[in-house]
Amino acid sequence: MPETTLAAETELPKTSTRLLMVTGPGRSGTSAVTGALSQLGVHVPPPLVDWNKSNRKGFFETRWVVDFQREVLKAAHTYEFDADPRAAARIADATDAATQEELSRWLHGAAAGHRQLVIKDPRSVWLHDLWERAATDSGLTLCFLTMLRHPTEVVGSRSTYYGTAKDPRKARDYAISKVAGWINVSLLNERQTRGRPRAYLRYTDLLADWRSALTGVRDAVGLELNADLSSGEPSPVDEFISPELHRIRTGWDELDVPDELRTIAEQTWDACCRLADEGGDTDLSTEFDDLSERYARSYRDAAAIASDTIDSAVARAAAESARKVRQEFEDRLRESEQASGSRLFEMKAAGAAGAKATVTRARRLSKRVVRRVRRRLDR
Image (cartoon, rainbow, N blue to C red; front, side):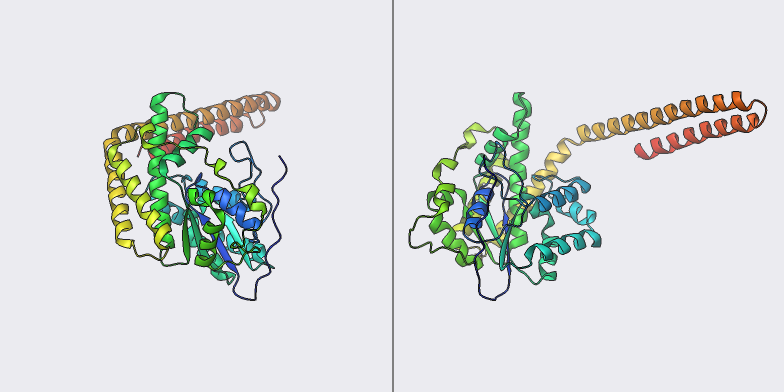
């Protein structure tokens, strides 16, 4: 497979530089649409993430962005498909002025010399505020393109390429958690982009007629492309996008998920499709806010049911951590005693008493540290 290549950027009139953020849960067609836009003159900052067997045409993700956002999520103990409605707050707590400065500095350099650029990484939904401030710092006009794919197909695709569970029970747990993650990410993304220049596009619409689909995106967010999409002239995008990309067609009948979760997911999908059909500026805020509250309540209920399991797991993890800390101190203490024993033999009487006293103090100190660590872990 050859390396992913990018088309030359379109020459735009001297207007505000646009930063298009391609959003939507991973496996929703975000790679396909970003790859198409790159061939129509929208700059994707290199170097890019390499292709792999799950996406042989390329991800069209900027390597620096992926690495940066992974580190932020890791520090916040948050996941790309995190189902916790409070996950965004964890991200906010884990970022600071230095994090913002790092992103702003990179974006300023990446945008230099370009009139429009696109960033695609599903993790961006968790760092929305950072991107918004970074765009403002560089004088960029921020806009959004959200790709839509039915949650059952997203989960089916993730299970096919990322899932590792062979046990039916674990496979079901995986599917449930990913449906929940799809809901949470979709609702968060809508709330964050509300009132801003945005377009919603179904993956199936992109595959069926990419020219019409991208014409709508172009007009909604103010892009300028390097081809007349109404002419029907041959384009490299014709080879890049085709209905054959629609490989996964999982339905609800193939996923065993709780009825309430299925209902919330289906209603969220329907609301998002209305934004695709009626325009991103359609006011559905009440409907989306109600869905967010309903999902948050369902998530709290599930957490309450599993509270004993969670508490037990935390307690066992704390005990294991304390055991490892204690073992580490004891190992180091033995090494210290052995080294001190050699020194005592060599030094004989000279300083021997002092060396023994040092070992004794080290032993007492290690025991105190272990006790303190255990008390903290057991809280």
